[in-house]
Amino acid sequence: MSPLSPVEAASHRAHLLIREGAPRGEILTLLARAAEQASGPRTTVSILVIDEEGLLRNGASPNLPRDYLDAIDRLKPHPKVGTCAAAAATGQVVMTPDFQADEKWAELRHLPLALGYQGAWSTPIKSAKGNVLGTFGTYFRDRREPTADEIEMVRVLAGVAAQAIEATP
Image 1 (cartoon, rainbow, N blue to C red):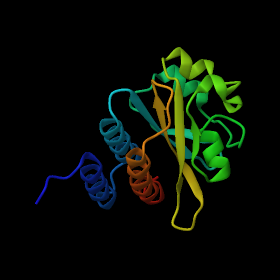
Image 2 (cartoon, rainbow, N blue to C red; image 1 turned 120 degrees about the vertical axis):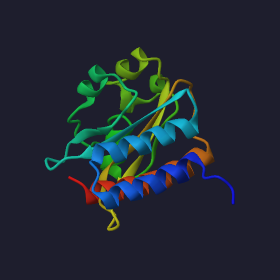
Image 3 (spheres, rainbow, N blue to C red; image 1 turned 90 degrees about the vertical axis):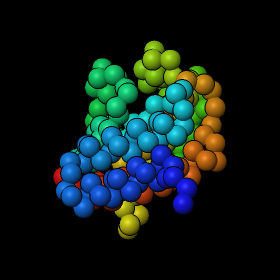
């Protein structure tokens, strides 16, 4: 039997934590770190969760600075703002290979650029019924789109994140 990949191991551990009633932040941080490990050192993951007011709040962003998280806290989902707000609003994957070239980032591009990020992509985290619960965003230090493997990995991890969000306060 071959060893589990980081994504498989994190998914398995997250399911155990969900059953044990672990805090949501602990589970989402585990998933974010697994995505970062699998994607490599030039990526950073941020999981945002839609709160009861319909605003995006930090669920787990273990490697983004507090001032950045404060600046994006309580973003309203909108199809023409960034990648995570757009993914939350549309329920679709949103890719921004280059912040400088994407008008959705006109008001916010200074934030990730100041941290050395060049692009990002985000996939919505959806409930079993298809409701958007949050977003799984990945920032790149290079101008690029995600690979097919990264897209599949995040699809799997976003499914586990949905279970965690629905199961934990």
